[in-house]
Figure 1 (cartoon, helix red, strand yellow):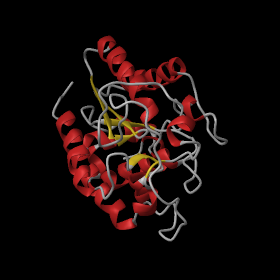
Figure 2 (cartoon, helix red, strand yellow; figure 1 turned 60 degrees about the vertical axis):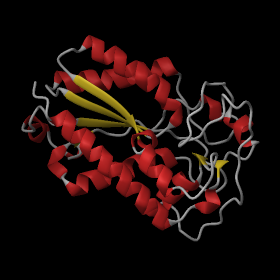
Figure 3 (cartoon, one colour; figure 1 turned 30 degrees about the vertical axis):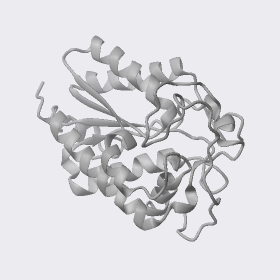
Length: 254
């Protein structure tokens, strides 16, 4: 079920324990081969598959398309809002959901730059609304174990406009499987404790802009390892785990 496609009366009739999902995405550069709405398309792609399988199991809110992307502003096309603005805006949406009587909320993140503020939103809203349950998942961390088996690249093959994101855009029908792809692996190393990827966690965090990490390419990882078949495998693994999260949240009645 999609919130914005329903009448007020139809929303009133939805069971209040139904998990309400808000996708946190981004509008930012994704290398020379993917559009700037890639994170929003990928988040919507996963939620569309989830809805197709069981439309009544969750209520999907309109995507928050513009997120925290200041580290991409060296590249044209990027839109960004400050973390405090993102937090106030998202919490205002969640307050509206809570006011409507819903008690189970899932923040579904599809952009790395939203992870930190997403955790703050979770803690701020959760503490202020003890009658609700709120969870946060990022798609690649949710299915990291399975995706490690799916990946065809090395430690730094998955990051941004990479093997995974390019494959998912193919599977979503947003780009053609025959698209010209940047060749090779793109990643500028810094320190062993700070370097990581979607599938390989770092020991710590060092702030660097996307221009710095990508060597000016706008790509982190290996996009030429992508395929539409790979995209379908990733989709299957992420949606399978997302269903578990939704089911678990739905067990809590207000």
